[in-house]
Image 1: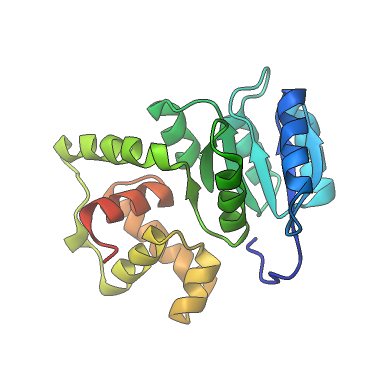
Image 2: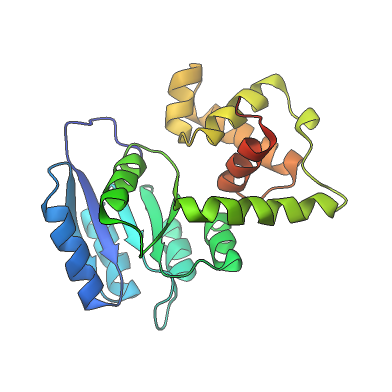
Length: 221
């Protein structure tokens, strides 16, 4: 679900087990007219229920929580039909955590120690359907992909069709399937099929990995 009415404030659900953190985010968003904290949950199970009840535009999801962790919660949200943006919001900058979250379908990965103004800017981008990643993590992701080059099935841009390359460039720009479809004048379903095919051809497991790889290789030019 990508918002098309930019005059309407984006609604956000925060799922995090730290009350002080939730209060800080709530106070930050109170200062913004275009971002609204629609609900908050200290437990993943409560968050799953609220996601169904509120159907927010975006969910800010902590990675490390007791019981059901962020990855399991992310998968449960998708399984129950939540189609909005899911952005991981965590203190972990470990490569395995970042890669696991993005491969599980997260639309972004933001670190809790980021500047508040930068966080608001990133949330606005996420609400518009763009992929968001803390700047300090892009080099980490690039290095993770670089390590795959020594594997037998390293990504090969020449394996893609012209249309797949066009879509890859838009992924590198951070566009969602809906925005890519609008820009290329094709259906969102067609975009999804192309994304699936290009990920398979490049031996990558998520659109974010594909975007980082494309930028690294200069495919986005």
